[in-house]
Image 1 (cartoon, rainbow, N blue to C red):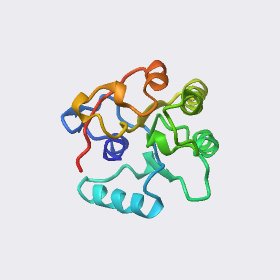
Image 2: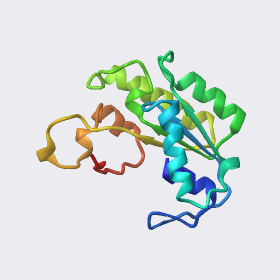
Image 3: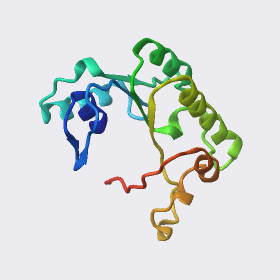
Image 4: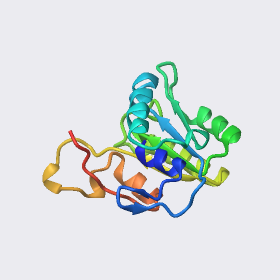
Length: 163
């Protein structure tokens, strides 16, 4: 969320990474924490930034009645035309929950492909590792739905989230 906010804000850097383009519109899609906690996190981040990016930053959150985010995401894209779409988190974007089966993961990659071909947006998607197998360290083979997602994606950034 902070990365998207700083891009929308027109900041020069996120962490130590240079933000090359200004004036980008960002759509942040929450599938995990819900509207209230998402808004609380937004407020916490905004108070630590010189926040002026409200015109370029939009958030939507999956609610309990939605099976998946995809139809709503395409509608919101048509209306807002964001330059960057951040999906946090892929595993919760659909009603499927067993991503060891490639058919289930293919539903997500299929929707990502539609998003990629039907929009001009850059897609940044957060996804999780399977539990266990920590001895393997950070490797893309530990991603949930690994082979299907690996075959689809363009770039992976592996990171351990703080507990």
